[in-house]
Amino acid sequence: MSGRGLGGWTLMGIPCQTIKAVQERSGGVCELCHSRPATQVHHAKTKGMGGSTRVYTAEMLEDLCLKCHAAGHGYTVLLENDY
Ligand SMILES: [Zn+2]
Ligand SMILES: [Zn+2]
Image (cartoon, rainbow, N blue to C red; front, side, top):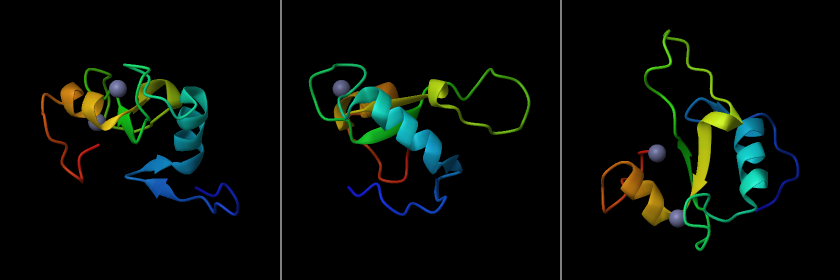
């Protein structure tokens, strides 16, 4: 993955800077099991925060492997557009 020339994209409303911060924090390893490559950025805290403004910070996100991400949503299979 090239880190060059990123022009301010967002992932479902999450700024690229935030995504990058999470990925740098995890080092590309799942932050839950620490044994598999992280491939999914998951927002861990979305409800119960109050207010309607969606502001995602790196602290609210987790870099997870496919399996842990699916488990976090209570699934065994991850839907492509679910994050
Ligand atoms: Zn994992
Ligand atoms: Zn998720």
